[in-house]
Image (cartoon, rainbow, N blue to C red):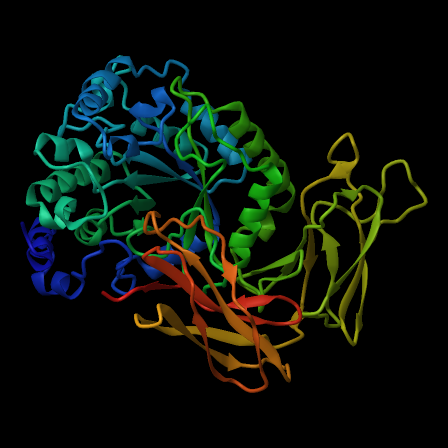
Length: 554
Protein backbone atom coordinates (compact mmCIF):
# COMPACT_ATOMS: atom_id res chain seq x y z
CA UNK A 1 0.00 0.00 0.00
CA UNK A 2 1.27 3.49 -0.88
CA UNK A 3 0.07 6.84 0.30
CA UNK A 4 -0.83 9.67 -2.07
CA UNK A 5 2.53 11.40 -1.74
CA UNK A 6 4.44 8.24 -2.62
CA UNK A 7 2.06 7.61 -5.51
CA UNK A 8 2.76 11.09 -6.88
CA UNK A 9 6.50 10.64 -6.43
CA UNK A 10 6.37 7.35 -8.36
CA UNK A 11 4.71 9.05 -11.32
CA UNK A 12 7.00 12.06 -11.01
CA UNK A 13 10.02 9.85 -11.50
CA UNK A 14 8.32 8.01 -14.34
CA UNK A 15 7.38 11.26 -16.10
CA UNK A 16 10.56 13.15 -15.36
CA UNK A 17 8.63 15.83 -13.44
CA UNK A 18 10.10 17.68 -10.46
CA UNK A 19 8.85 15.94 -7.36
CA UNK A 20 7.91 19.18 -5.60
CA UNK A 21 5.70 20.16 -8.54
CA UNK A 22 3.77 16.90 -8.32
CA UNK A 23 3.43 17.05 -4.55
CA UNK A 24 1.77 20.45 -4.94
CA UNK A 25 -0.75 18.84 -7.28
CA UNK A 26 -0.94 15.48 -5.57
CA UNK A 27 -4.43 15.65 -4.12
CA UNK A 28 -6.02 12.24 -4.53
CA UNK A 29 -8.98 12.10 -6.85
CA UNK A 30 -11.17 9.50 -5.21
CA UNK A 31 -14.88 10.01 -5.65
CA UNK A 32 -15.77 13.64 -5.91
CA UNK A 33 -12.49 15.13 -4.62
CA UNK A 34 -11.39 16.03 -8.13
CA UNK A 35 -8.79 18.77 -8.02
CA UNK A 36 -9.68 21.04 -10.93
CA UNK A 37 -7.46 23.92 -9.83
CA UNK A 38 -4.16 22.17 -10.57
CA UNK A 39 -5.08 21.14 -14.10
CA UNK A 40 -2.27 21.34 -16.65
CA UNK A 41 -4.70 21.61 -19.54
CA UNK A 42 -3.35 24.46 -21.65
CA UNK A 43 -5.67 27.51 -21.77
CA UNK A 44 -5.67 27.65 -25.57
CA UNK A 45 -6.51 23.95 -25.75
CA UNK A 46 -9.31 24.41 -23.24
CA UNK A 47 -10.71 27.19 -25.42
CA UNK A 48 -10.48 24.88 -28.41
CA UNK A 49 -12.35 22.20 -26.47
CA UNK A 50 -15.11 24.59 -25.42
CA UNK A 51 -15.57 25.68 -29.03
CA UNK A 52 -16.22 22.12 -30.24
CA UNK A 53 -19.39 21.70 -28.22
CA UNK A 54 -20.45 18.25 -29.39
CA UNK A 55 -18.66 14.93 -28.93
CA UNK A 56 -19.52 11.29 -29.55
CA UNK A 57 -18.90 8.78 -26.74
CA UNK A 58 -18.55 5.13 -27.82
CA UNK A 59 -18.93 2.42 -25.19
CA UNK A 60 -17.97 -0.98 -26.58
CA UNK A 61 -16.31 -4.00 -25.03
CA UNK A 62 -16.25 -7.77 -25.02
CA UNK A 63 -19.43 -8.13 -22.92
CA UNK A 64 -21.52 -6.35 -25.57
CA UNK A 65 -22.08 -9.92 -26.81
CA UNK A 66 -24.39 -10.51 -23.86
CA UNK A 67 -26.14 -7.15 -23.95
CA UNK A 68 -25.10 -6.45 -20.37
CA UNK A 69 -24.15 -3.33 -18.46
CA UNK A 70 -20.56 -2.76 -19.54
CA UNK A 71 -18.14 -4.27 -16.96
CA UNK A 72 -20.40 -3.76 -13.93
CA UNK A 73 -21.88 -7.28 -13.94
CA UNK A 74 -18.52 -8.45 -12.55
CA UNK A 75 -19.07 -6.67 -9.24
CA UNK A 76 -20.64 -9.13 -6.81
CA UNK A 77 -20.35 -11.98 -9.32
CA UNK A 78 -19.61 -15.60 -8.39
CA UNK A 79 -16.24 -17.19 -9.16
CA UNK A 80 -17.83 -19.21 -11.97
CA UNK A 81 -19.27 -16.08 -13.56
CA UNK A 82 -15.96 -14.24 -13.30
CA UNK A 83 -14.06 -17.15 -14.84
CA UNK A 84 -16.53 -17.40 -17.73
CA UNK A 85 -16.27 -13.67 -18.31
CA UNK A 86 -12.49 -13.49 -18.41
CA UNK A 87 -11.81 -16.82 -20.13
CA UNK A 88 -14.76 -17.45 -22.45
CA UNK A 89 -16.10 -14.12 -23.72
CA UNK A 90 -12.96 -13.23 -25.72
CA UNK A 91 -13.24 -16.55 -27.61
CA UNK A 92 -16.48 -15.47 -29.31
CA UNK A 93 -15.94 -11.74 -29.85
CA UNK A 94 -15.80 -11.32 -33.62
CA UNK A 95 -17.47 -8.10 -34.88
CA UNK A 96 -17.41 -9.01 -38.58
CA UNK A 97 -19.55 -5.98 -39.57
CA UNK A 98 -17.31 -3.45 -37.86
CA UNK A 99 -16.83 -0.48 -40.21
CA UNK A 100 -15.50 2.54 -38.29
CA UNK A 101 -15.49 4.64 -41.47
CA UNK A 102 -19.28 4.32 -41.57
CA UNK A 103 -19.51 5.43 -37.95
CA UNK A 104 -17.23 8.39 -38.64
CA UNK A 105 -19.12 9.54 -41.73
CA UNK A 106 -22.38 9.50 -39.81
CA UNK A 107 -20.78 11.33 -36.88
CA UNK A 108 -19.42 14.02 -39.19
CA UNK A 109 -22.86 14.46 -40.76
CA UNK A 110 -24.36 14.81 -37.27
CA UNK A 111 -21.96 17.65 -36.47
CA UNK A 112 -19.77 15.71 -34.05
CA UNK A 113 -16.44 17.49 -33.49
CA UNK A 114 -14.61 14.92 -31.32
CA UNK A 115 -14.91 11.26 -30.42
CA UNK A 116 -14.10 9.46 -27.15
CA UNK A 117 -13.64 5.69 -27.48
CA UNK A 118 -13.43 3.14 -24.64
CA UNK A 119 -9.88 1.84 -25.02
CA UNK A 120 -10.27 0.05 -21.67
CA UNK A 121 -13.35 -0.07 -19.46
CA UNK A 122 -13.49 -1.30 -15.84
CA UNK A 123 -13.42 -4.98 -16.80
CA UNK A 124 -9.84 -4.47 -17.94
CA UNK A 125 -10.46 -5.74 -21.48
CA UNK A 126 -8.20 -3.84 -23.86
CA UNK A 127 -9.90 -2.80 -27.09
CA UNK A 128 -6.39 -2.18 -28.43
CA UNK A 129 -3.16 -4.12 -28.97
CA UNK A 130 -1.55 -4.01 -25.55
CA UNK A 131 1.51 -5.90 -24.31
CA UNK A 132 0.43 -5.55 -20.68
CA UNK A 133 -2.27 -8.24 -20.59
CA UNK A 134 -3.57 -11.17 -22.65
CA UNK A 135 -7.11 -9.91 -21.95
CA UNK A 136 -7.38 -7.80 -25.10
CA UNK A 137 -8.81 -7.63 -28.60
CA UNK A 138 -5.80 -9.30 -30.23
CA UNK A 139 -6.64 -12.54 -28.42
CA UNK A 140 -10.08 -12.84 -30.00
CA UNK A 141 -11.18 -14.28 -33.35
CA UNK A 142 -11.31 -10.69 -34.65
CA UNK A 143 -7.61 -10.11 -33.94
CA UNK A 144 -7.56 -6.49 -35.11
CA UNK A 145 -6.72 -3.32 -33.20
CA UNK A 146 -10.17 -1.75 -32.95
CA UNK A 147 -8.96 1.40 -31.19
CA UNK A 148 -6.42 2.12 -33.92
CA UNK A 149 -9.05 1.67 -36.63
CA UNK A 150 -11.60 3.88 -34.85
CA UNK A 151 -9.12 6.72 -34.35
CA UNK A 152 -7.93 6.51 -37.96
CA UNK A 153 -11.45 6.58 -39.37
CA UNK A 154 -12.53 9.58 -37.30
CA UNK A 155 -9.34 11.51 -38.04
CA UNK A 156 -10.03 11.00 -41.76
CA UNK A 157 -13.39 12.72 -41.30
CA UNK A 158 -11.82 15.67 -39.48
CA UNK A 159 -13.11 14.58 -36.08
CA UNK A 160 -10.67 15.02 -33.17
CA UNK A 161 -9.62 11.72 -31.55
CA UNK A 162 -10.18 11.04 -27.86
CA UNK A 163 -9.90 8.09 -25.50
CA UNK A 164 -11.69 6.79 -22.42
CA UNK A 165 -9.46 4.98 -19.94
CA UNK A 166 -10.45 3.26 -16.69
CA UNK A 167 -7.80 3.21 -13.94
CA UNK A 168 -10.02 0.64 -12.22
CA UNK A 169 -9.23 -2.78 -13.65
CA UNK A 170 -11.21 -5.84 -12.58
CA UNK A 171 -8.96 -8.26 -14.49
CA UNK A 172 -5.89 -7.02 -12.62
CA UNK A 173 -7.75 -7.20 -9.30
CA UNK A 174 -8.88 -10.75 -10.05
CA UNK A 175 -5.38 -11.89 -10.97
CA UNK A 176 -4.08 -10.35 -7.78
CA UNK A 177 -6.65 -11.96 -5.50
CA UNK A 178 -8.65 -8.82 -4.70
CA UNK A 179 -12.40 -8.33 -4.48
CA UNK A 180 -13.91 -6.80 -7.61
CA UNK A 181 -15.45 -3.47 -6.67
CA UNK A 182 -15.18 0.27 -7.27
CA UNK A 183 -15.13 3.43 -5.23
CA UNK A 184 -13.23 2.07 -2.21
CA UNK A 185 -9.62 2.74 -1.33
CA UNK A 186 -8.59 -0.91 -1.26
CA UNK A 187 -8.91 -1.21 -5.06
CA UNK A 188 -7.64 2.23 -6.09
CA UNK A 189 -4.29 2.65 -7.89
CA UNK A 190 -3.16 4.88 -5.02
CA UNK A 191 -3.34 1.86 -2.71
CA UNK A 192 -1.98 -0.70 -5.19
CA UNK A 193 1.48 0.12 -6.58
CA UNK A 194 1.23 -2.78 -9.02
CA UNK A 195 -2.06 -1.49 -10.46
CA UNK A 196 -0.66 2.04 -10.76
CA UNK A 197 2.35 0.73 -12.64
CA UNK A 198 0.10 -1.44 -14.83
CA UNK A 199 -2.23 1.50 -15.65
CA UNK A 200 0.74 3.75 -16.34
CA UNK A 201 2.21 1.25 -18.81
CA UNK A 202 -1.12 0.98 -20.63
CA UNK A 203 -1.59 4.74 -20.76
CA UNK A 204 1.93 5.12 -22.12
CA UNK A 205 1.08 2.65 -24.90
CA UNK A 206 -2.03 4.59 -25.83
CA UNK A 207 -0.30 7.98 -25.82
CA UNK A 208 2.81 6.90 -27.71
CA UNK A 209 1.49 4.38 -30.28
CA UNK A 210 -1.70 6.04 -31.53
CA UNK A 211 -0.69 9.52 -32.59
CA UNK A 212 -1.87 12.82 -31.08
CA UNK A 213 -4.89 12.43 -28.81
CA UNK A 214 -7.00 15.53 -28.27
CA UNK A 215 -9.21 14.47 -25.34
CA UNK A 216 -8.73 11.97 -22.52
CA UNK A 217 -11.48 10.81 -20.16
CA UNK A 218 -10.34 9.08 -16.94
CA UNK A 219 -13.19 7.13 -15.35
CA UNK A 220 -11.64 6.63 -11.94
CA UNK A 221 -8.76 7.87 -9.83
CA UNK A 222 -6.74 10.10 -12.14
CA UNK A 223 -4.42 12.34 -10.15
CA UNK A 224 -1.15 10.69 -11.05
CA UNK A 225 -2.15 9.28 -14.42
CA UNK A 226 -3.15 12.68 -15.73
CA UNK A 227 0.37 13.92 -14.93
CA UNK A 228 1.70 11.18 -17.16
CA UNK A 229 -0.75 12.11 -19.90
CA UNK A 230 0.28 15.77 -19.85
CA UNK A 231 3.94 14.75 -19.86
CA UNK A 232 3.54 12.46 -22.88
CA UNK A 233 1.19 14.74 -24.80
CA UNK A 234 1.26 18.33 -23.49
CA UNK A 235 -1.57 19.44 -25.79
CA UNK A 236 -4.01 16.80 -24.59
CA UNK A 237 -7.20 17.98 -22.86
CA UNK A 238 -8.01 15.86 -19.82
CA UNK A 239 -11.77 16.03 -19.30
CA UNK A 240 -12.90 13.79 -16.42
CA UNK A 241 -10.09 14.10 -13.93
CA UNK A 242 -9.52 17.82 -14.62
CA UNK A 243 -12.96 19.43 -15.14
CA UNK A 244 -16.61 18.95 -14.26
CA UNK A 245 -18.08 15.96 -16.08
CA UNK A 246 -21.64 15.36 -14.87
CA UNK A 247 -23.11 12.07 -16.02
CA UNK A 248 -26.71 11.58 -17.20
CA UNK A 249 -27.57 15.10 -16.05
CA UNK A 250 -27.06 18.76 -16.94
CA UNK A 251 -26.29 21.29 -14.19
CA UNK A 252 -28.95 23.82 -13.31
CA UNK A 253 -26.64 26.78 -13.85
CA UNK A 254 -24.29 28.10 -16.51
CA UNK A 255 -20.54 27.93 -15.87
CA UNK A 256 -17.91 30.23 -17.31
CA UNK A 257 -15.43 27.37 -17.35
CA UNK A 258 -15.06 24.14 -19.29
CA UNK A 259 -17.40 21.28 -18.44
CA UNK A 260 -18.76 18.27 -20.25
CA UNK A 261 -21.91 16.24 -19.70
CA UNK A 262 -21.93 12.62 -20.90
CA UNK A 263 -25.41 11.29 -21.62
CA UNK A 264 -26.72 8.08 -23.16
CA UNK A 265 -29.20 7.91 -26.04
CA UNK A 266 -31.28 5.50 -23.97
CA UNK A 267 -30.67 4.21 -20.47
CA UNK A 268 -27.60 2.08 -21.23
CA UNK A 269 -23.99 2.90 -22.05
CA UNK A 270 -23.25 -0.31 -23.90
CA UNK A 271 -25.63 -1.94 -26.38
CA UNK A 272 -28.54 -3.60 -24.59
CA UNK A 273 -31.11 -5.17 -26.91
CA UNK A 274 -33.75 -5.41 -24.19
CA UNK A 275 -35.01 -2.96 -21.61
CA UNK A 276 -33.38 0.11 -23.12
CA UNK A 277 -35.61 3.12 -23.61
CA UNK A 278 -34.29 5.57 -26.17
CA UNK A 279 -34.77 9.29 -25.94
CA UNK A 280 -36.35 10.88 -28.99
CA UNK A 281 -34.24 12.82 -31.46
CA UNK A 282 -35.95 15.97 -30.24
CA UNK A 283 -35.01 15.22 -26.65
CA UNK A 284 -31.37 14.70 -27.64
CA UNK A 285 -31.29 17.95 -29.62
CA UNK A 286 -32.79 19.71 -26.63
CA UNK A 287 -30.04 18.27 -24.40
CA UNK A 288 -27.41 19.60 -26.80
CA UNK A 289 -29.02 23.04 -26.82
CA UNK A 290 -29.36 23.22 -23.04
CA UNK A 291 -25.77 22.09 -22.52
CA UNK A 292 -24.44 24.75 -24.89
CA UNK A 293 -26.67 27.42 -23.36
CA UNK A 294 -25.02 26.63 -20.02
CA UNK A 295 -21.48 26.75 -21.41
CA UNK A 296 -20.76 23.02 -21.55
CA UNK A 297 -20.05 20.29 -24.10
CA UNK A 298 -22.38 17.38 -24.75
CA UNK A 299 -20.69 13.97 -25.06
CA UNK A 300 -23.51 11.86 -26.51
CA UNK A 301 -23.07 8.12 -26.14
CA UNK A 302 -23.66 5.25 -28.55
CA UNK A 303 -23.06 1.55 -27.94
CA UNK A 304 -22.31 -0.58 -31.02
CA UNK A 305 -23.82 -4.04 -31.38
CA UNK A 306 -21.48 -7.03 -30.88
CA UNK A 307 -21.25 -7.47 -34.66
CA UNK A 308 -19.86 -3.93 -35.03
CA UNK A 309 -22.93 -2.14 -36.37
CA UNK A 310 -24.78 0.70 -34.71
CA UNK A 311 -28.32 -0.19 -33.70
CA UNK A 312 -30.92 1.30 -36.04
CA UNK A 313 -32.33 3.37 -33.15
CA UNK A 314 -28.94 5.01 -32.69
CA UNK A 315 -28.46 5.64 -36.39
CA UNK A 316 -31.94 7.17 -36.71
CA UNK A 317 -31.29 9.61 -33.88
CA UNK A 318 -27.90 10.62 -35.21
CA UNK A 319 -29.51 11.33 -38.58
CA UNK A 320 -32.21 13.46 -36.97
CA UNK A 321 -29.50 15.41 -35.14
CA UNK A 322 -27.63 15.66 -38.47
CA UNK A 323 -30.60 17.32 -40.16
CA UNK A 324 -30.92 19.86 -37.36
CA UNK A 325 -27.18 20.55 -37.17
CA UNK A 326 -26.97 20.93 -40.97
CA UNK A 327 -29.17 24.00 -40.56
CA UNK A 328 -28.27 25.30 -37.12
CA UNK A 329 -24.71 24.30 -36.17
CA UNK A 330 -23.49 27.90 -36.01
CA UNK A 331 -25.60 28.26 -32.85
CA UNK A 332 -23.66 25.34 -31.30
CA UNK A 333 -19.99 25.88 -32.23
CA UNK A 334 -17.77 28.55 -30.63
CA UNK A 335 -20.56 29.86 -28.42
CA UNK A 336 -20.80 30.89 -24.79
CA UNK A 337 -23.72 31.59 -22.41
CA UNK A 338 -25.94 34.66 -22.70
CA UNK A 339 -26.84 36.65 -19.56
CA UNK A 340 -29.54 34.05 -18.88
CA UNK A 341 -29.82 30.52 -20.25
CA UNK A 342 -33.42 30.66 -21.41
CA UNK A 343 -36.78 32.39 -21.34
CA UNK A 344 -39.21 29.52 -21.08
CA UNK A 345 -38.94 27.46 -24.26
CA UNK A 346 -36.48 29.88 -25.87
CA UNK A 347 -32.81 29.02 -25.18
CA UNK A 348 -29.84 31.30 -25.84
CA UNK A 349 -26.26 30.94 -27.02
CA UNK A 350 -23.97 33.71 -28.21
CA UNK A 351 -20.84 33.71 -30.36
CA UNK A 352 -17.82 34.11 -28.13
CA UNK A 353 -16.69 37.06 -30.29
CA UNK A 354 -20.06 38.74 -29.69
CA UNK A 355 -21.00 38.77 -33.37
CA UNK A 356 -24.37 37.09 -32.91
CA UNK A 357 -26.92 35.98 -30.35
CA UNK A 358 -29.00 32.90 -31.05
CA UNK A 359 -32.54 32.51 -29.75
CA UNK A 360 -33.36 28.80 -30.10
CA UNK A 361 -37.16 28.51 -30.12
CA UNK A 362 -38.46 25.11 -29.02
CA UNK A 363 -42.26 25.30 -28.96
CA UNK A 364 -44.37 22.70 -27.24
CA UNK A 365 -46.13 21.83 -30.51
CA UNK A 366 -44.42 21.46 -33.91
CA UNK A 367 -44.08 24.67 -35.88
CA UNK A 368 -45.92 24.24 -39.18
CA UNK A 369 -44.48 25.55 -42.41
CA UNK A 370 -45.96 28.90 -43.41
CA UNK A 371 -47.13 29.68 -39.88
CA UNK A 372 -46.28 33.09 -38.41
CA UNK A 373 -45.27 33.26 -34.76
CA UNK A 374 -44.62 36.16 -32.41
CA UNK A 375 -41.74 35.74 -29.99
CA UNK A 376 -41.07 38.21 -27.18
CA UNK A 377 -37.57 38.26 -25.66
CA UNK A 378 -37.38 40.14 -22.39
CA UNK A 379 -33.61 39.79 -21.91
CA UNK A 380 -32.61 41.11 -25.36
CA UNK A 381 -32.36 44.72 -26.51
CA UNK A 382 -32.11 45.57 -30.21
CA UNK A 383 -29.88 48.37 -31.49
CA UNK A 384 -30.07 50.39 -34.73
CA UNK A 385 -27.67 47.86 -36.32
CA UNK A 386 -29.66 44.76 -35.28
CA UNK A 387 -30.70 42.24 -37.93
CA UNK A 388 -32.76 39.11 -37.24
CA UNK A 389 -33.13 36.06 -39.47
CA UNK A 390 -34.07 32.39 -39.27
CA UNK A 391 -31.03 30.15 -39.72
CA UNK A 392 -31.14 28.21 -42.98
CA UNK A 393 -33.87 30.36 -44.57
CA UNK A 394 -33.50 33.29 -46.97
CA UNK A 395 -36.64 35.03 -45.72
CA UNK A 396 -37.82 35.66 -49.30
CA UNK A 397 -39.71 32.58 -50.52
CA UNK A 398 -42.46 30.34 -49.17
CA UNK A 399 -42.94 27.35 -51.47
CA UNK A 400 -46.19 27.49 -53.50
CA UNK A 401 -47.13 30.85 -51.93
CA UNK A 402 -45.61 33.53 -54.19
CA UNK A 403 -47.54 36.35 -52.53
CA UNK A 404 -46.12 35.56 -49.08
CA UNK A 405 -42.78 37.13 -48.11
CA UNK A 406 -41.57 35.26 -44.99
CA UNK A 407 -39.17 37.98 -43.85
CA UNK A 408 -38.61 38.28 -40.12
CA UNK A 409 -39.46 41.68 -38.62
CA UNK A 410 -39.04 43.06 -35.12
CA UNK A 411 -39.62 46.04 -32.88
CA UNK A 412 -38.63 47.07 -29.37
CA UNK A 413 -41.39 47.62 -26.83
CA UNK A 414 -41.27 48.41 -23.13
CA UNK A 415 -41.58 44.71 -22.26
CA UNK A 416 -38.86 43.49 -24.62
CA UNK A 417 -37.92 42.61 -28.18
CA UNK A 418 -40.96 41.55 -30.25
CA UNK A 419 -40.10 39.28 -33.20
CA UNK A 420 -42.55 38.34 -35.98
CA UNK A 421 -41.22 35.35 -37.88
CA UNK A 422 -42.13 32.30 -39.94
CA UNK A 423 -40.81 28.82 -40.59
CA UNK A 424 -40.62 28.86 -44.35
CA UNK A 425 -38.55 25.79 -45.29
CA UNK A 426 -40.18 22.42 -45.94
CA UNK A 427 -37.86 20.06 -44.09
CA UNK A 428 -40.25 17.09 -43.85
CA UNK A 429 -43.00 15.85 -46.13
CA UNK A 430 -45.69 16.32 -43.49
CA UNK A 431 -44.74 20.03 -43.47
CA UNK A 432 -44.07 19.99 -39.74
CA UNK A 433 -40.68 20.50 -38.11
CA UNK A 434 -40.64 18.94 -34.64
CA UNK A 435 -37.29 20.42 -33.70
CA UNK A 436 -36.27 23.94 -32.63
CA UNK A 437 -36.01 26.94 -34.94
CA UNK A 438 -33.03 29.26 -34.44
CA UNK A 439 -33.21 33.05 -34.73
CA UNK A 440 -29.91 34.81 -35.43
CA UNK A 441 -29.79 38.25 -33.82
CA UNK A 442 -26.90 40.62 -34.50
CA UNK A 443 -25.73 43.69 -32.54
CA UNK A 444 -27.92 42.81 -29.54
CA UNK A 445 -27.44 44.05 -26.00
CA UNK A 446 -28.67 42.79 -22.63
CA UNK A 447 -32.00 44.27 -21.61
CA UNK A 448 -31.79 43.32 -17.95
CA UNK A 449 -29.49 42.35 -15.10
CA UNK A 450 -30.39 38.89 -13.77
CA UNK A 451 -30.26 38.14 -10.03
CA UNK A 452 -27.61 35.79 -8.67
CA UNK A 453 -27.92 33.17 -5.96
CA UNK A 454 -25.26 31.10 -4.20
CA UNK A 455 -25.55 27.74 -2.48
CA UNK A 456 -23.86 28.06 0.92
CA UNK A 457 -23.32 25.59 3.77
CA UNK A 458 -25.51 23.01 5.50
CA UNK A 459 -25.72 21.72 9.06
CA UNK A 460 -26.91 18.28 10.19
CA UNK A 461 -28.76 18.14 13.50
CA UNK A 462 -28.77 14.53 14.80
CA UNK A 463 -31.11 15.35 17.66
CA UNK A 464 -33.89 16.46 15.30
CA UNK A 465 -32.83 14.39 12.33
CA UNK A 466 -32.87 17.45 10.10
CA UNK A 467 -30.63 19.52 7.85
CA UNK A 468 -30.34 23.28 7.93
CA UNK A 469 -29.69 24.46 4.38
CA UNK A 470 -28.15 27.87 3.75
CA UNK A 471 -27.98 30.11 0.69
CA UNK A 472 -27.28 33.70 -0.24
CA UNK A 473 -28.99 36.02 -2.69
CA UNK A 474 -26.01 37.93 -4.06
CA UNK A 475 -27.98 40.55 -5.99
CA UNK A 476 -31.57 41.31 -6.90
CA UNK A 477 -30.95 42.14 -10.50
CA UNK A 478 -33.55 44.82 -11.15
CA UNK A 479 -36.31 43.21 -9.09
CA UNK A 480 -37.80 44.70 -5.93
CA UNK A 481 -38.66 41.28 -4.47
CA UNK A 482 -37.75 37.70 -5.36
CA UNK A 483 -38.67 34.21 -4.24
CA UNK A 484 -35.78 32.03 -3.05
CA UNK A 485 -35.50 28.52 -1.72
CA UNK A 486 -33.82 25.15 -2.14
CA UNK A 487 -34.08 21.90 -4.07
CA UNK A 488 -32.59 18.55 -3.03
CA UNK A 489 -32.21 15.00 -4.34
CA UNK A 490 -30.83 11.67 -3.20
CA UNK A 491 -27.49 10.54 -4.64
CA UNK A 492 -27.34 7.17 -2.89
CA UNK A 493 -26.38 4.29 -5.15
CA UNK A 494 -25.04 6.65 -7.84
CA UNK A 495 -21.62 6.75 -9.43
CA UNK A 496 -19.89 9.85 -8.11
CA UNK A 497 -20.55 11.73 -11.37
CA UNK A 498 -23.97 10.27 -12.26
CA UNK A 499 -27.28 11.80 -11.26
CA UNK A 500 -30.65 10.25 -12.09
CA UNK A 501 -32.98 11.14 -9.20
CA UNK A 502 -35.30 14.14 -9.77
CA UNK A 503 -34.95 17.36 -7.83
CA UNK A 504 -37.48 17.96 -5.04
CA UNK A 505 -38.48 21.59 -4.48
CA UNK A 506 -38.88 23.02 -0.98
CA UNK A 507 -41.24 25.89 -0.10
CA UNK A 508 -40.12 29.32 -1.31
CA UNK A 509 -39.64 32.46 0.74
CA UNK A 510 -39.69 36.10 -0.31
CA UNK A 511 -36.70 38.47 -0.09
CA UNK A 512 -36.68 42.20 -0.79
CA UNK A 513 -32.93 42.69 -0.28
CA UNK A 514 -29.78 40.68 -1.01
CA UNK A 515 -28.68 38.52 1.89
CA UNK A 516 -28.62 35.07 3.42
CA UNK A 517 -31.56 32.72 3.79
CA UNK A 518 -32.06 29.22 5.18
CA UNK A 519 -34.56 26.41 5.47
CA UNK A 520 -34.94 23.24 7.52
CA UNK A 521 -35.18 19.90 5.72
CA UNK A 522 -36.78 17.10 7.70
CA UNK A 523 -38.37 13.71 7.16
CA UNK A 524 -35.98 12.34 4.59
CA UNK A 525 -35.89 8.61 3.84
CA UNK A 526 -32.96 6.83 5.49
CA UNK A 527 -30.49 7.44 2.65
CA UNK A 528 -27.03 8.57 3.62
CA UNK A 529 -26.20 11.05 0.89
CA UNK A 530 -28.03 13.94 -0.69
CA UNK A 531 -27.18 17.07 -2.61
CA UNK A 532 -28.91 20.42 -2.61
CA UNK A 533 -28.85 23.72 -4.43
CA UNK A 534 -30.22 27.20 -3.85
CA UNK A 535 -32.73 28.67 -6.28
CA UNK A 536 -34.07 32.15 -7.04
CA UNK A 537 -37.27 32.54 -9.05
CA UNK A 538 -36.94 35.36 -11.56
CA UNK A 539 -40.08 36.30 -13.52
CA UNK A 540 -38.46 34.79 -16.63
CA UNK A 541 -36.89 31.63 -15.23
CA UNK A 542 -35.39 29.89 -12.21
CA UNK A 543 -31.70 30.54 -11.53
CA UNK A 544 -29.63 28.12 -9.44
CA UNK A 545 -26.56 28.00 -7.27
CA UNK A 546 -24.05 25.18 -7.52
CA UNK A 547 -24.98 21.68 -6.34
CA UNK A 548 -23.44 20.70 -3.00
CA UNK A 549 -23.27 17.27 -1.36
CA UNK A 550 -24.59 16.86 2.17
CA UNK A 551 -23.99 13.91 4.45
CA UNK A 552 -25.12 12.99 7.92
CA UNK A 553 -22.37 13.26 10.50
CA UNK A 554 -21.56 10.06 12.39
